[in-house]
Length: 629
Image (cartoon, rainbow, N blue to C red; front, top):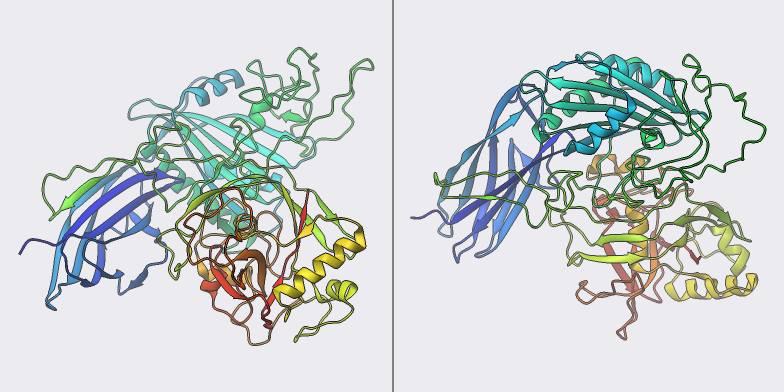
């Protein structure tokens, strides 16, 4: 009997990983069951770092049943563990046919070449040459981390140099800001095998405790192996020196641009930099900010000022003297915050990249019945050469979102305008009514930093309906109708009409905070306890006692479900694309989002939806307030 299953595969290098997507299609008219995938590879060379939400049992990924004419896909993140070697990835596919007979076959092996380059240095590289290399090197990639401790930038710089300089690379420049909040270290080298130029940088942002390893060269495979090795060594070094194992967390970037704290963009090719940027290896500074495209720069004809360096003091003293006749220049905020501060000057727009998503026009190959005609191709990105293999969609962001507090003590965070993909990816379980995924544009809004508390409710309504009575716990046991009365009264108290419930799209956009993972912090449900109160028989908890998302919003996962404005629809077919609430049908059922103390972790996912009658009250149901800008 012919094999009823067809295998297609895609692969690409990104963020120091090899993304390997396998799609299994049932080409028979019958149900095929108990489908499992057993990947076979050299565990000394590769490590599985992620696999979405599919169950791993006895070393096999369980896909379950696939109906006739349907397919299922799984994306595996392989992390290289060794350099200068090629690794074969094989897979045994097991299934039960419609007559109950068990069958299996092997996918044709795929060889993955990951080269960690052994560097050799050449003559000194100045800033002008460095910027030229970055401009011309087509393959660029990075690995991103968030620190869970308060290690200083100076100590971070020492550890980073220790790790990176184990390779035979030449240190070019170290840049940092006068206020000591941002740091970059740049290196140059060439591969011994083929002599390709390669640029490496380490950057760190003190305020958000985020660090990035960036590299650029001609070969994406080189980047993957190099970043995997550097990232692993840096993570281990920081954790061992600070005695805090597991406190350096990989950031998963998805679907929207993130920007790097690229101080290099504030320097000209002649080595002159803005007065707020110190080059530890030079004494030349400049007065204006300049990005790659000049959009954020001041006038290029402004005079330059030479300022003595203080390479041993980080940050330097503030006693920099300026000419008496010099104009005072207001330096705009040069960093646009997304995902805790990874920076890249790309026309003021940013994009976050999804470790588990492949672009629609990706090159792929079929492994039909494991035939020899298979030809595996790397995914290539024809839209944006900045990030090979990644299809990116811009999302505008603001720096350091402003906050304000209203008359009853509700704190609001400014949420930037932008675009995002609403709904859940196909690899998420329990997705039911969370599709189809569709792009939505969101305008700038203010959203409550916390869920509305019982104290705030009482100040407007005069009584407390909550079961779990505590002034700083979220108000609960309030219906959608009750919430509208609260909003009307608050608007009257302040003589405004700006307060309302968020739309479902606005809520999900704010929850994701620039990501498209299952949760705002990634796909690993084991980390949910750091961000959410869920499956907790003790009821609600004080707001803001778990970790916030990347836009500073607390309890977007768990504590209490949150009412939004929309009428419930069982799919997103024909849903608005402008961020407005969807109320085109006569229904009493309204949507609530976020999960609660009494629900499981899967109900706390960014895309998870629930609904209740507008008059219903539950002790796990509250709300968060929106204020129009």
